[in-house]
Amino acid sequence: MIQHSVFTILSQADIFDNMSKTQLEMIAAIGELLICQEGEILVRENDRSDELYVIGAGHVEVLIDPSLVTSQAEVMPQMLVVELGAGQVFGEVALVDQGIRSATVRVSRKDTVIVRISRQRLMLLCDTYPELGYKLMKNLAADLALKIRQTDLTLRQYQLLLAKA
Image (cartoon, rainbow, N blue to C red):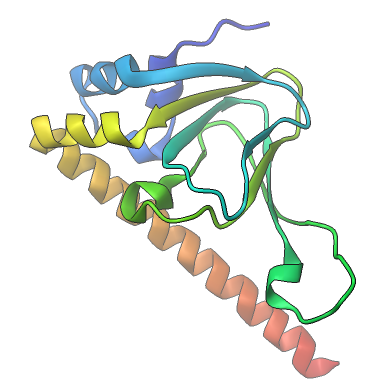
């Protein structure tokens, strides 16, 4: 297996774009490298946790429980929303609102490499180094805006399909 470093993984993620080498090294120092196996659950929908995850290699599936928004009595299986790969992040909403998780995230490939970063430690770093914090929050806002636009487009496509039915 290829050797991965937290610094290298972070340097390839858009959420850490425009960070200096020193800033990336500081963030890398608080990151935890995980090697995960297929089927492993990293985050559960409706749980409280506030870590940010960066995918270094492999893939994860983002799943939602449709029974939370339907009155149907039968238990419905989890639905795949998206599969994420290297350089992508999840858990970024928890950095903002510390709310419950909006989806379950399950590892979909063996030997998936993930960096987990504690919100508390990251926010302390941002408070201590405001320039780093500004860059991170700017990148975080751009990441969330892109995801909102993609979700909006998906919803519009579903509306069109339903209107034709």
